[in-house]
Length: 180
Image (cartoon, rainbow, N blue to C red):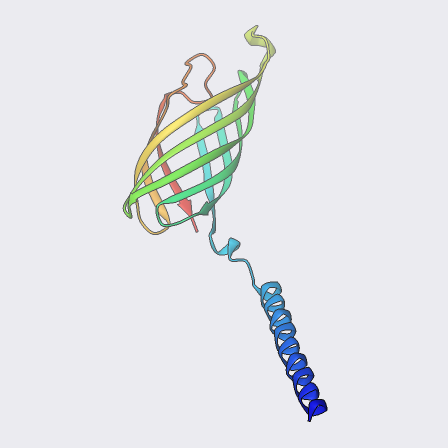
């Protein structure tokens, strides 16, 4: 009888240990199979700009990506490249990046803050007598816009605007922002 109790107790302990160990393994397996939803919150977008005038050309490409934390907040990064030329006057290349924060107090309204850092390289035509320039310029844009599902139309203001060095002609700028 004592042997039977001992066998039963050992069998019970073995069964409990086996169940606990198996449950632990299954929990580990589920953890490893869990897929991150990070990319479900990433949205891509950007802008393209072209301008043509008499003897003048400007082209801009600016891809960006944001991470949508929730329906109200998003944070992202962007790159930008611009080429400008005016025949017999100058050629310039502007390369940079930015960090953008977006806040939607309600679905249709978007408030933004964007810190942009650009390297400006201006090559003047020899006939102008001007010295070529290469410098860094920082812009801090605060903006507001009307938002639909993928598109925001609005205006932004560069609070660090310097008329002599800015890569933009005016501190106020309308924008169209698109993210998918």
